Image 1 (cartoon, rainbow, N blue to C red):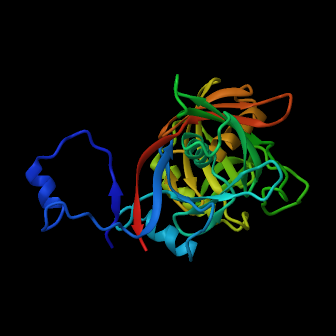
Image 2 (image 1 turned 135 degrees about the horizontal axis):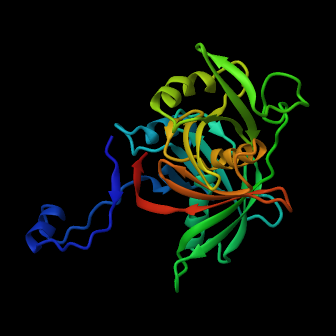
Image 3 (image 1 turned 90 degrees about the vertical axis):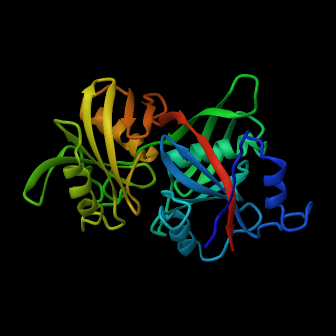
Length: 318
């Protein structure tokens, strides 16, 4: 399968090269590529393929997600995100997310920042603050544009209120109880876990040293599919470098290790505060960069601010 990409370049080609690329006949027009238009974007390295599905969505989305996301035979991404129209009053757009393995997820905090940039940069959303519907509910986003432009530079997301009971996460055990700093043992290794839902399930483990591959790649996939989590779980390994700075690595449900996880950073922010490791404001350093986090005491919501970048666009042959 050939992927036709549209890449901007400032380099001029010679008239000979232009003639050769235009076909046998000088001046012949190139045939349009038929397929699925896409935009590759990332938030702190958490990369997804974005499809404008406001009018029509492609068929067989799980298979499409697996093929597009493949980093050797496809475009390469942590998954695909469709931008659809919302039917909710006062909300214009909805985000639908599929992981690289084809499974559907409720929300991605880094992904929704890129959805906001996609909509704002193209004037589909004209104001700097607007709502987007997700599988975890309607979230409000605030865009900081580049000076003098209508191009998003940073995006702040109200991630909503954390959910802490086992029934809400969900996880095994008494549905009304919480899992905060509970002892756990796996493969002969003892550690403590705190579990949070940000519309999707998260398990946070605080370590005495920065997280290593032994933790992330060794225990991450086993914990993701542990019987304790009926819908699987996102697993986060965190080191407190200071009360204002946490170092986080993530094994993401349905994808594997990712450079960033927005809902995960939100869960880590809540877990760190609940365990008395930080206050309610902090920076979380993920492999893809820094995220500014706050668990607001007044409204109980988690706020996340970070970058959103467009990498390239193209057409996936149908």
